[in-house]
Every structure is written in structure tokens, then in C-alpha cells.
Amino acid sequence: MRMGELMEAVKRSRFLADLSPYDRDPWRTAFAVPVGMLAGAVAAVLGGASAILLAVLVVSGLDGAPAVGELFAVFSDPNLTEPTARQSMFILAVLAGVNLGLAVGFVVAAGAIHHRRITDYVNGGEPMRPRLLLGGLVVVGVVMGAVVAAAALLGQPIDPPLWKVAPNLVGRALYAVLAMGLLVLAAAAEELLFRGWLLKQSAAYVRDPIVLMLLNGLLFAAIHVDPNIDAFLVRAAMGMGLTWMALRLGGIELGIGAHAANNAVILLLIRPMTTRPDAPHEFKAGLIASALVVLAGFIGVAELSLRWPALRRWTRGGAPAAA
Image (tube, rainbow, N blue to C red; front, side, top):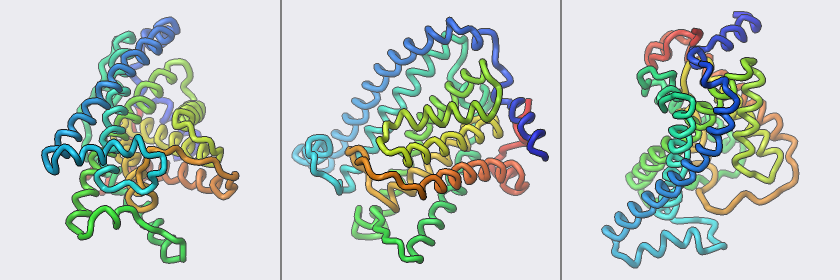
């Protein structure tokens, strides 16, 4: 398929085929954003509080009430750089609760103004494709894991946080499984908000795939509030690649898996989960090349999911998602 034909196919993505006059009404959009933000803020508080309460109940039931103080040290100790396994899981649980509450609250409220259900922002109201999610999780996880392993073999110093969370393989495996579950929830929340609501809503006004990818990627990077321009560019490239996935596959399932795998490799093999923001550093020009590799990689995963017959059949991703 030539580039021009590919772009035309993406413009006719099944994910955008159900756009209606309600979506193209600028007054509805202007009203939907603040209403969604208010609903999202309330739901984020409820989601975070529920995650904290559940974590406290579990920990106090296992080791008694005094152990709960260890959890809250992640918020009160400014010098904490190496959280324990329990603290890391607590951070992930709160993050997943807040993200999921924010995304669901925003999308349900804003979508109602546009006469939409939340499933319209997942894959156009079609049945969920869990194998596509799992495919993104496995493919991106394997590729990124291989890159980390290659870097270690070439002499790059790597100290995987996963090795420190438990003294044995069983404990590490249990931690990895629990972390993956929470990371999938957190990634699903971000995909629902950005590659779901934002992508569909912005496509109501502009249909050019490149513009949609740039807009989505830049806003996705901006929301992370990273002070470093090079890291901003890498996140923007990731957001652009995930936008391509949603347009090509007609939904966000593959993007959820790919997004969660990316975060899992970083948090389990590269650096631990903390509440401290990234410190400013000098601009690293090499990360520009990394951003391009990330963009090409995520686009490549989408095309692989569509063009490799065996993978397409297993994930049930179907044909390229043109309406």
C-alpha cells in the first residue's frame, strides 16, 4: 500500500466513522470540557480514596495497623528514592485509582453531552477485543525487554527494581503480575481519555492523520508536566504512535496493551516507581533519535498486527479499520 493510499485509509478509520453533528457542535464541545473536568476531578478523588482504603485494609489485615504507616511514608518522606515493594504497589494502586476515576468520570460526563456512551470511545461501541490488548502487551513487552537486555550486554549499567522487591523468584513473579494488572488499568485510563475521547472529538473538526497525531502527542506529553524537553519529545512520539494504533485498528485495545508494556518495562527493569517528579537535566540530543525510534516502533506494532496473518488471526484484530 502506497503512502497516499495508507493515509486515505486512515482518514476513513472505522473509529471515526460514527462522528455526528453532535460531535461537530463547537458549543457542545466548549460545554463538555469543563463539565468533564469537574466530573473527572470528583471521580479521581473517589478512585484514589478507594485505592488507599483498599490498600490500608489489606496491609492492616496482613501485618497489623502499624504497617500502614510505611505506606504513607511515600507521601511524607521527601528523601525516599528507593520505595519498598509494598510502597511501590501502593503508589501504583493509587495512581491506577486516580487515573481510572479521572478518565471514566471525564469521558462519561463529556460523552453524554455529545450523546455518546463510554464504549463509543473504546472501539466505536463494538465488542471489546481482549486478545488485541494482550497482543500489544506481549509484542511491545518482548521488544522492549530485548532492547534492555541488549543494552545490558553492551555494558550499560542496569539495576532492575524487580530484583529488589523480593528475595526469591516466586515473590518477584507475584509482584510483577500485580504490577502488570495495575499498569493495565492506568494505561487504559490514559488511552480512554487521549486516544478515545480526545482523538474522536478532535477528528470531528480535522481529519488529517498527521495533525491528529501531532495534537494528541503534544497534549499527551504536556499533561505529564515533565521539565525536560527531550523527555517531552519521547512522550509526544509515544502519543503519536498510539494515535496511529487507534486509527488503524479502530479502537484503543492494542494501545492499552502497548502502553502498559512500555510502563512495565520501565518500572520493573529500569527505574523504580516513586512519587518524586523527574529532576531537570541538560538537554540530551540523543533522545531525539530515541523519540523517532519510539514513534516508528509503535507504528510498526500497529502495522504488524494488521499485516502478519498469524498475529492478526490470534489477536482477532481484523482487517485494517477503514469504514
